[in-house]
Image 1 (cartoon, helix red, strand yellow):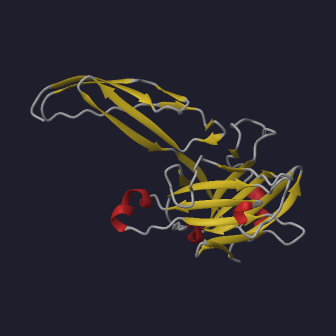
Image 2: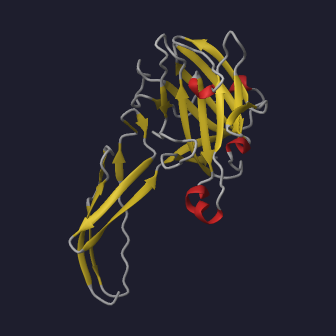
Length: 273
């Protein structure tokens, strides 16, 4: 602009985010043509209301300042490890990977009411995952999401920035089911509005306490992710079998409600070498 600007801008996190800014204001005293940039540190709880944080909203306001809001995507580091020749090696390979809790706040020990703990890494051109799932009513249904299963969703970050220009950028959607007395553990791709078995997804599971352990190796291409990319957006949903009242539990890692078609609550996986 052509006018001198002297403003104090208040900053705060949007409601629902448990965290603090190290500085909650920005003072600008600028002559025409000048610019100002400043870095802030945001300290937040890793899990909030039983969900792992994926997005943070920051709002700015002040006298004579048009209110503005910016949404930041939280980066979650994923290890890159050597390709694995067998799904039975996943649990050991991911032993030191960070555990993502589903349905509980992060802590040193799994909580009794937590639904699952998940670990991830990129192994060659596959996503490796190991899950500890608490499901006392293990059962597989024709529509997999109505029974015991883990759903994984992923896409390129470009989907959020370029979709309106390019269009048709897909979300990869994969189902993983545990072994039951009716059949082995399996991997499925959502295709033509239904899950279809895909032998390229390697899955193994074993009973464990009040649920099961599940390991999987999923080709990244089935999740619409280029294996050479250093980052991708992802979400995970855990579903349980139904109890005597016909009720099951369903919870997502980052809080998505419509993960099969919306990425607004996906987190950003950043793959480390």
